[in-house]
Length: 203
Ligand code: ADP
Image (cartoon, rainbow, N blue to C red; front, side, top):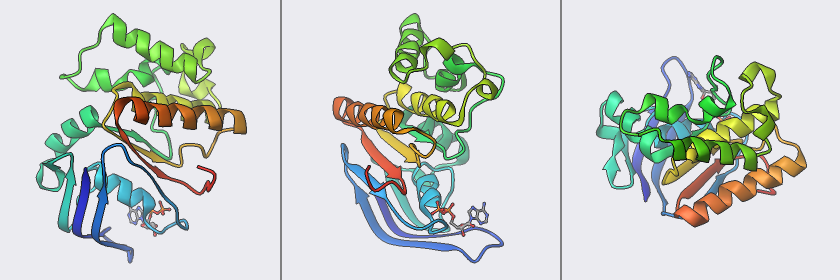
């Protein structure tokens, strides 16, 4: 369960403010936030994942009150439990496709890299049509391919919560369908929740 209560957030030096009196998203739910650019959708995802902290109120994710954790505890929690697909992908430029998908295992000591995990990363790349590009660097990929790598990285750890910011924004119709099916089946198989920010009403 994700629960936000009496939340108030503002960026320093900005007029923008986000106030949420109450929001609950259950395990296994698939939710889309739709709204005009600048209405605070990305900000909301970053508050749920603990990248941002509210000035007031509570953010609870899976029983963990993340708004009261310090930065390193929030980061640890995020890497193990939340798969976040960023609007700008946030790929590591010197890592190839396979290693970008495996990134959570490089940066979280509690996740153990095994041959099976590497095989899972390759299988995800394959499902997303990236098998023949597994050794390429992000600069050698199209926007749509980079987006698929970012999604692969988010689902590898089988997170309880997948937060995806415009996950189909750079994809052609065939890949869009493929990726949506992959995200949805990931949620159905793992009981994960999917929270998407999108302009795509078809999703
Ligand atoms: P959306 O995802 O709906 O397009 P955002 O959450 O990205 O909206 O942004 C909400 C508002 O906050 C916008 O007005 C944006 O300009 C502002 N904003 C976003 N990030 C920052 C930041 N780091 N510092 C100051 N203002 C920001």
